[in-house]
Length: 186
Image (cartoon, rainbow, N blue to C red):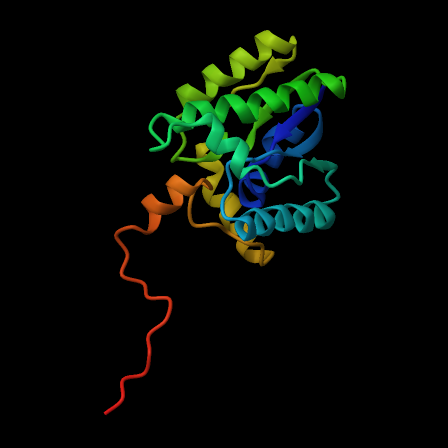
């Protein structure tokens, strides 16, 4: 079986690779117009490239920074953004899988404890219905810690939030971290 696996980040791929690889020939695909800011997008893409090179994994990536496209899809306040984001990313992954003649597609987001698995499953099923490529749902949350451990051991970048501008705000809004503190003069 030929499988295209949507990759949100290298740690999630590290944790799920064995599960997907056991099903067939895997092609990893990075498509994440939601990731913000640009440097975060580049860090995640670079981490995937490094991981793929070290592990000999075939991958492809949409390297276009998609903030404008993402913001056009979601409400101005970010309400209800996750299902919209899942549909966009899995829809594009399914179309890519069809272009590549794959039998199925899935996503590494299934390893996250923070993602809405029911919404991912619905988005995957809708994309499958549109393209005729099977969506493989697997609950891989038990592999999240393994992925983080592998990424840490390989010194790969590990992000601190889902990726979008709204999740970045939610992650850091209650922190007291200061970026710069001027020296106090006596």
